[in-house]
Image 1: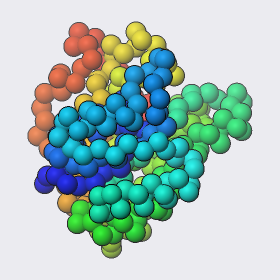
Image 2 (image 1 turned 60 degrees about the vertical axis):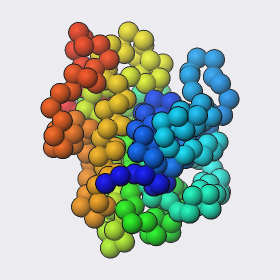
Image 3 (image 1 turned 30 degrees about the horizontal axis):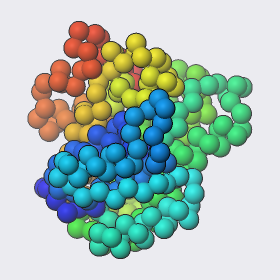
Length: 273
């Protein structure tokens, strides 16, 4: 199934995994909404909504860059209206925007927790709430959130429970919303990498530049997201999917192409044993 002329909203898509998904879908001729806060260049981080828009157009898609803070409900509502007016509808929403904070509860301020909750879990609610009326008009609608399977191993509960609850909240929304929307044939799924992915979050928030050698590139998540979006919606919903497992089930055998450094060991991501 082609994504040609399909309209896909991707939050947090000015760099990293979101950007890679945007370019993958653009190569199919999709209309890509680059919805992110990054409208101006950052001194350390490459990419803005405008640079990605140019890349999307060069890849063969149509781009609509929108500066968006997913915490601002009315801005999300206005974005959905603007996108539908521009492209005639909405076919998919990808909740890629996220905030990571790996601190224990004792050392996490309520303000910091509220920030994580708003950008992670609450944003899934807000984007879905305002996208559903448009998605119901699509022939193959999808909501995809980048959140992990529910792994209740004590080590994931202990180390950074504030962050963990916000990411698991995204997955719980996914599971429940899939059932709520099943009769409307809107697919709702979660996608998570088996391994750490080379992004700015890994370099600056989780580890350091040296850690990037133990990562896979964002291309593996883009390929997995593409597989989901090109699957008929009523054939795949309510699932917490791992990128490698999904791609293996679709025939991919060689994963060495995704290694950031072919000579270095690849490390598992958070929440993956």
